[in-house]
Structures are given as structure tokens and as C-alpha cells.
Length: 141
Image (cartoon, rainbow, N blue to C red; front, side, top):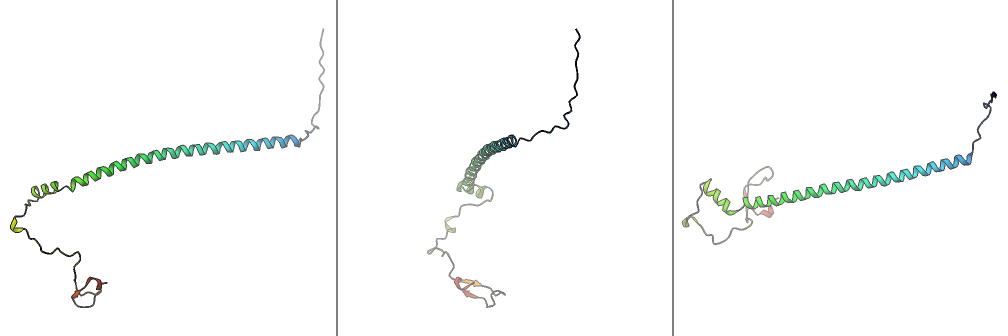
């Protein structure tokens, strides 16, 4: 038995596809909804990464603050050491050759020195055209 196949030529070149506006509208709406969801997810991810980045920055700043506080403490200790009277006395005696004053070198004042002098000696200059005189401090400008 022989089989015979007949090939029929079909010309579809004149056919055009109808545009389904309802289907196109649904597809466009789904694409917009998907883009909005993607944008929302990207925004949430960016916010999360920013929070993590700020956490790292805050930890670094806390670490730097602790190191600066430690450095301040060390500097205060060094200042206290450098200002100690025993150290200053040792340097004065050993390196500078100073001695404690004898009793006849000590002068006791009956009145303490005033905080501000009562009069000031002003020399003649272009700024002060008057002669050298004794002037009270509140008169000098």
C-alpha cells in the first residue's frame, strides 16, 4: 500500500493579525505594576544598605571616640607628670644648677603686689602725640 501525500500551498500573506486592545491594555498594566514593584524593592534594598552603611560608620566613629578619649587620658597623665613639683625641682637642681634660697635671700613683703598697676608710663609715639607722663590705665585707649 502506497500512501500519497498531497501538499497544498496556503498563501497567508494577505492575512493580518487583529490587535486586541483589551489584551494589550492588560499586558501594559501588568508591566507597569511589575516595574512599580521592582522600584519599590530597589528602594527598600537601598534603604537597608544605607542603614547598614550608617551602622558601620557609627561603629568606626565610636572606635575613634574611644581612642581619642584614651589619648586625652594619656595626655592628662603626661601633663600631670610634667607639672609635678618634684620633677621640676629635680631638673632645676640637676640640669640648671639652681639651689634653694638661703634665709637671708628671702624677702617678705608687707603688702602684696596689686593685680593691676595704678599708673602706666606711656611713651611718646605717633599714636600718642602727648609727652611721656603718668597716665591711669582707664585713660589710655
